[in-house]
Amino acid sequence: MALDEIPRMKIVHGDAGYVLEDVPHLTDFIPDLPTYPNPLQDNPAYSVVKQYFVNQDDTVAQKIVVQKNSLRGTHFRRAGPRQKVYFESDEVQACIVTCGGLCPGLNTVIREIVCGLAYMYGVTNIIGIEDGYKGFYARNTISLSPRSVNDIHKRGGTILNTSRGGHVTSKIVDSIQDRGINQVYILGGDGTQRGASVIFEEIQRRGLKVAVAGIPKTIDNDIAVIDKSFGFDTAVEEAQRAINAAHVEAESFENGIGLVKLMGRYSGFIAMHATLASRDVDCCLIPESPFYLEGPGGLFEFIEKRLKEIGHMVLVVAEGAGQELIAESLRSINHQDASGNKLLLDVGLWLSQKIKDHFTNKGKIPINLKYIDPTYMIRAIPSNASDNVYCTLLAHSAIHGAMAGYTGFTVGPVNGRHAYIPFHRVTEKQNKVVITDRMWARLLSSTNQPSFLSLKDMEQMKKEDEPANQVLNQNSIAGDYHVESTEGNGLPDGSTSC
Image 1 (cartoon, helix red, strand yellow):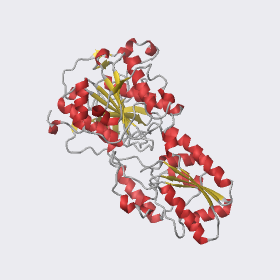
Image 2 (spheres, rainbow, N blue to C red):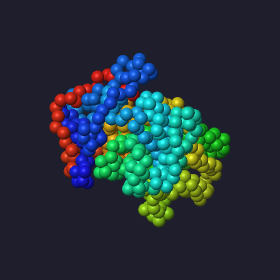
Image 3 (tube, rainbow, N blue to C red):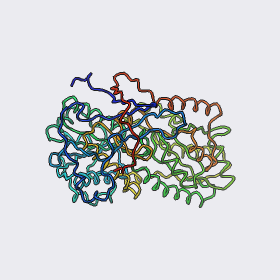
Image 4 (tube, rainbow, N blue to C red):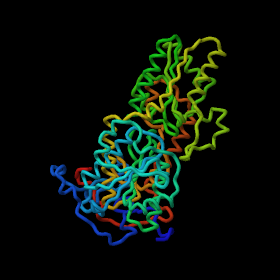
């Protein structure tokens, strides 16, 4: 298939404004593939399930809060096991790779992919690619089995090791082809998922029977479309320990200030949720909400006011906050790491020094400031119980999709239901805190901090949010693959998800 013949998107239109943004299928570029009965129908563990398989027409709505005259809007294909599969168990040669930074839950996802393939589908040929994308062509593989991964969920990090960059598409696909791999499970953030999309496109060009499934991983929770990413709950929970320590330090000294820096390169979800959960935080600074230091209504004025009122203060700052205020950032604004992420200066150290300098120069209030950066402690811990369950669902959804012949997709929950989402939808933009939303208002109410924004700024942000809410039904992108249909797009029938 030529490059210009590969459709960018599969769009199905139905009645009442129904739009299905479908994911590719192996039969889109390899016609007449044989199908096989799903082994789950003979699996004793599933004998108690009322309905084994997801209805082929089940879809998940992206928007669930509607008015009576609303169009049905955008939907995604529901995840779960299908009645027919496109791989026989002994035919499957699966591989797993982890890319990018560490995140709680990586080992759990690896374990559940291996165990899910083995116990649900009888797959025995599973390998792990070491050291991220470059491991496809630069490192040996390791054999994975349920026994070898049995206890890895109790450990942080990833048993496969990881790295940033190293994406050479031709070498990666050559390795996949040479090794006879036909299912590729890729764990990583938005940059990794972009790489997975390119791998899928090259596989499609070569006409290979290889399913490519992405499992989105970002501790910052900035993956678009899905409800949340794995590891986020663990990160918020672990951040409480740092905040509690900062509060103890601040409360134990006269005019004590505890400053905690948390992850959040572009999105402040960890800082926001950790602040709301703690109730000990007096001010939370995130990338989405600009702030200033000097003058009326500035951060320094608020710190001084809070110290006079209660004698201590706790600040939480996301790593991407206030970058525009750091003068030195002009020298590094275009510097990037191997994954393409902008290199940030340490806002925690910078802000600590600025606060110390301000109160020292003012000479009125002697302060005791303690700075805590728990970033690598949080990234390196095992996932908690909630994330372990979530990782299992993600892994199983990816397996069911690959076995059913779907490819070029990432998996995740959309409004509580797991779905298969085209790669481009999770890489075209990042999920960010909406500071004109009620959740941010709850935080401001909890901390009693100023918004640091004028009414004019707030109105402008509301206007900027409006166009984003109007693009759900805009599918007139050049090169889209449209399938007109008014039938077979029924609502979920209540069957059990994976």
